[in-house]
Amino acid sequence: MTTTDYPATGPLAPAAQGTLKLVDVRPYGEGEPVTVLVEDGVIVDLDADRDVETDHTVDGGGHVLLPGLVDIHVHLREPGREDTETVITGSQAAAKGGFTAVFTMANTSPVMDQPVIAESVWLKGQHAGICDVHPVGSITKGLAGKELTEFGMM
Image (cartoon, rainbow, N blue to C red; front, side):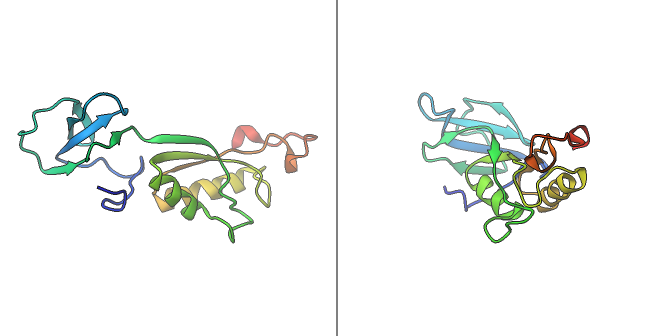
Protein backbone atom coordinates (compact mmCIF):
# COMPACT_ATOMS: atom_id res chain seq x y z
CA MET A 1 0.00 0.00 0.00
CA THR A 2 1.30 3.47 -0.84
CA THR A 3 -0.05 6.92 -0.10
CA THR A 4 -1.08 7.23 -3.75
CA ASP A 5 -3.39 4.21 -3.54
CA TYR A 6 -6.00 6.31 -1.77
CA PRO A 7 -6.69 10.03 -2.12
CA ALA A 8 -5.47 12.20 0.73
CA THR A 9 -8.35 13.18 2.96
CA GLY A 10 -8.33 15.55 5.84
CA PRO A 11 -10.69 16.67 8.53
CA LEU A 12 -12.68 18.59 5.92
CA ALA A 13 -13.70 15.37 4.21
CA PRO A 14 -16.72 13.46 5.47
CA ALA A 15 -15.94 10.33 7.47
CA ALA A 16 -15.78 7.17 5.41
CA GLN A 17 -19.09 5.36 5.57
CA GLY A 18 -19.33 1.65 6.23
CA THR A 19 -16.71 -0.65 7.67
CA LEU A 20 -13.02 -0.78 6.88
CA LYS A 21 -10.57 -3.44 7.97
CA LEU A 22 -6.88 -2.48 8.13
CA VAL A 23 -4.92 -5.74 8.14
CA ASP A 24 -1.30 -6.08 9.27
CA VAL A 25 -0.75 -2.60 10.74
CA ARG A 26 1.17 -1.51 13.83
CA PRO A 27 -0.72 1.23 15.75
CA TYR A 28 1.80 3.87 16.83
CA GLY A 29 4.58 1.61 15.54
CA GLU A 30 4.51 -0.65 18.56
CA GLY A 31 4.17 -4.40 18.94
CA GLU A 32 3.22 -7.00 16.42
CA PRO A 33 0.96 -6.12 13.49
CA VAL A 34 -2.78 -6.33 14.21
CA THR A 35 -6.08 -5.92 12.39
CA VAL A 36 -7.87 -2.62 13.03
CA LEU A 37 -11.59 -2.23 12.46
CA VAL A 38 -13.02 1.18 11.47
CA GLU A 39 -16.77 1.89 11.35
CA ASP A 40 -18.03 5.10 9.76
CA GLY A 41 -14.62 6.75 10.18
CA VAL A 42 -14.14 5.77 13.84
CA ILE A 43 -11.65 3.15 15.07
CA VAL A 44 -13.72 0.63 17.04
CA ASP A 45 -11.27 -2.26 17.55
CA LEU A 46 -7.46 -2.33 17.65
CA ASP A 47 -7.20 -6.12 17.63
CA ALA A 48 -10.11 -7.25 15.48
CA ASP A 49 -10.76 -10.73 14.15
CA ARG A 50 -9.06 -10.97 10.74
CA ASP A 51 -12.07 -12.86 9.36
CA VAL A 52 -14.73 -10.24 10.17
CA GLU A 53 -16.70 -9.15 7.08
CA THR A 54 -16.24 -5.50 6.08
CA ASP A 55 -17.01 -3.22 3.14
CA HIS A 56 -13.31 -2.66 2.41
CA THR A 57 -10.03 -4.27 3.43
CA VAL A 58 -6.60 -2.65 3.21
CA ASP A 59 -3.40 -4.65 3.71
CA GLY A 60 -1.06 -2.40 5.67
CA GLY A 61 1.97 -4.61 5.03
CA GLY A 62 3.25 -4.14 8.58
CA HIS A 63 3.37 -0.35 8.27
CA VAL A 64 2.83 2.03 11.19
CA LEU A 65 -0.70 3.38 11.76
CA LEU A 66 -0.86 6.88 13.23
CA PRO A 67 -3.59 9.48 13.72
CA GLY A 68 -3.43 12.56 11.51
CA LEU A 69 -0.35 14.63 12.33
CA VAL A 70 -0.33 18.40 12.96
CA ASP A 71 2.55 20.64 11.85
CA ILE A 72 2.50 23.83 13.92
CA HIS A 73 5.21 25.64 11.93
CA VAL A 74 5.03 25.67 8.14
CA HIS A 75 5.84 28.30 5.52
CA LEU A 76 3.31 28.04 2.69
CA ARG A 77 4.64 31.28 1.11
CA GLU A 78 1.21 32.43 0.02
CA PRO A 79 0.48 35.29 -0.41
CA GLY A 80 3.39 36.75 -2.31
CA ARG A 81 5.69 33.84 -3.15
CA GLU A 82 3.37 31.55 -5.06
CA ASP A 83 6.30 30.82 -7.38
CA THR A 84 7.79 28.69 -4.58
CA GLU A 85 4.70 27.23 -2.90
CA THR A 86 0.96 27.78 -2.64
CA VAL A 87 -1.65 26.79 -0.10
CA ILE A 88 -2.65 23.95 -2.42
CA THR A 89 0.85 22.57 -3.11
CA GLY A 90 1.81 22.87 0.54
CA SER A 91 -1.40 21.14 1.61
CA GLN A 92 -0.77 18.34 -0.87
CA ALA A 93 2.75 17.83 0.47
CA ALA A 94 1.47 17.87 4.05
CA ALA A 95 -1.23 15.28 3.30
CA LYS A 96 1.31 13.02 1.58
CA GLY A 97 3.31 13.09 4.81
CA GLY A 98 0.30 12.19 6.97
CA PHE A 99 -0.50 15.70 8.19
CA THR A 100 -4.17 16.62 8.52
CA ALA A 101 -3.54 20.16 9.79
CA VAL A 102 -0.85 22.80 9.30
CA PHE A 103 -0.24 26.20 10.87
CA THR A 104 1.27 28.59 8.33
CA MET A 105 3.53 31.37 9.55
CA ALA A 106 2.96 35.11 9.03
CA ASN A 107 6.21 35.95 7.21
CA THR A 108 4.60 36.20 3.79
CA SER A 109 4.59 39.10 1.36
CA PRO A 110 2.45 40.94 2.28
CA VAL A 111 2.87 39.98 5.91
CA MET A 112 -0.13 38.17 7.36
CA ASP A 113 -0.91 41.06 9.69
CA GLN A 114 -4.49 41.83 8.66
CA PRO A 115 -7.63 39.74 9.14
CA VAL A 116 -8.42 39.90 5.41
CA ILE A 117 -5.06 38.29 4.53
CA ALA A 118 -5.41 35.55 7.13
CA GLU A 119 -8.99 34.87 6.04
CA SER A 120 -7.92 34.64 2.41
CA VAL A 121 -5.34 31.96 3.24
CA TRP A 122 -7.83 30.12 5.45
CA LEU A 123 -10.49 30.17 2.71
CA LYS A 124 -8.00 28.82 0.15
CA GLY A 125 -7.27 25.95 2.51
CA GLN A 126 -10.98 25.31 3.03
CA HIS A 127 -11.61 25.40 -0.71
CA ALA A 128 -8.76 22.97 -1.41
CA GLY A 129 -10.15 20.57 1.20
CA ILE A 130 -6.88 18.65 1.48
CA CYS A 131 -5.95 19.40 5.08
CA ASP A 132 -6.84 22.07 7.63
CA VAL A 133 -4.82 25.25 7.03
CA HIS A 134 -4.57 27.55 10.04
CA PRO A 135 -3.01 30.95 9.30
CA VAL A 136 -0.90 32.33 12.14
CA GLY A 137 -1.28 36.10 12.08
CA SER A 138 1.53 38.44 13.01
CA ILE A 139 1.27 40.10 16.41
CA THR A 140 2.84 43.30 15.07
CA LYS A 141 2.31 45.15 11.80
CA GLY A 142 4.83 44.17 9.17
CA LEU A 143 6.57 41.89 11.71
CA ALA A 144 8.33 45.08 12.84
CA GLY A 145 7.68 44.67 16.57
CA LYS A 146 6.41 48.25 16.97
CA GLU A 147 2.66 48.47 16.44
CA LEU A 148 0.16 45.76 17.37
CA THR A 149 -2.13 44.23 14.76
CA GLU A 150 -5.75 43.25 15.23
CA PHE A 151 -4.48 39.76 16.08
CA GLY A 152 -7.61 39.02 18.08
CA MET A 153 -9.55 39.10 14.81
CA MET A 154 -7.20 36.76 12.95
